Length: 507
Figure (cartoon, rainbow, N blue to C red):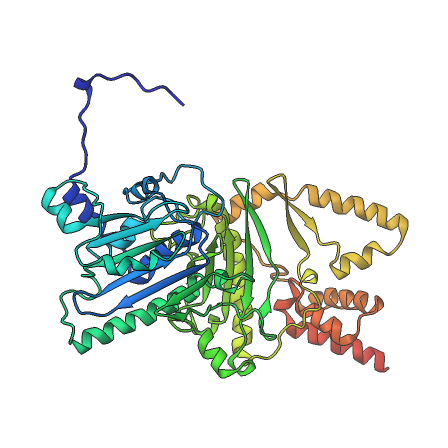
């Protein structure tokens, strides 16, 4: 790191931000109350909490919200640092399980919803420490004065910590964005308050569903009711199709993409189908679901990959798992409610999205009919992507039925064939393919594009013959071909090949 030139006081000015102006600006990060509360629960998870208790209390303009957890808590020094805006640089190396990034979440999330933020925390073996930001007081003094006590009359809202050996309470008061100056007897304002609480519950069920589903789960209590997880993939349903998982390496770190095609409504219980629609409905929840350290960041979005949300693709949902070291690559924002993939991944993600949308469309249009009876996902693709020492390479899938059958033909043939396959694998022109896909994403030909149907039927027939000779039944072979790239796009020709084989057998 280059040394900083020694400066004298005449060479610079200290340009500290005005406290009154800056603290109001921190309210404008674009949070809604659901994303704000999720940001606070991130802190509880990072503190290894087992339980999080949310309390929403209606009292007109004096309504309040508190979040209490049984995490490790903070010492007084740690609390003061946590209350400091920008308490951590996004450039600092973090714990791989850390859900934060900017050191702003507690403050910006809270300021976006209330004008008075009080935090009380107890570290094991320590007394309870309290600090408070009062935006109106900061405006009056125009100084960053972090108060050392709760507001008058607010002590009773922090009593839940007294009986705990460790933990933290975050208290929001003067909630101008949610209740404004509403009177306690304002029935309409109260209904809006209760509706908002329900939306928060649904949002937390979705964002933290993996934590709520663990063997030793996190428990989130909202006004004494336990939040039930909402899993977007219906992975336990028999009719849900898991397409092959793919792994990618970016900057030495791995991310995993797992596409799902959810069942047609005729294949599952109506209550399950209604719940699977999610907060915004089936159409809105199609697309990619981006997770960082098991925490959901994006819930149904095509990530700017030039796809539209369409009725016939509503069963397509694609899970993406990435570590927190990829925050910058994926443009994770302060709110942790948005992400955009790096340019190097867009072509692959677009390809995966296209295949998943196609499969979802087939299920939608065939009213749930099983399109491909896949014997095993490993038989679906001829190529496998692998990562070794942080570098990506490609190998032919040795368990692909055609490759497996050809390699068992004979020893001399096999040795030559293995040598040929390795030569093909080692000379895949990855840089050229990547460059062309990036610069001209829609100019690549599709498998067997422009090939006469008879030629393709002949190739399908050869594969069918190989499968049958290796002990597969007609039904198994049909299912395998229907799920095998690229034959899954030509099911009509698979039917022709099967009919010709059966006609030949009948003679």
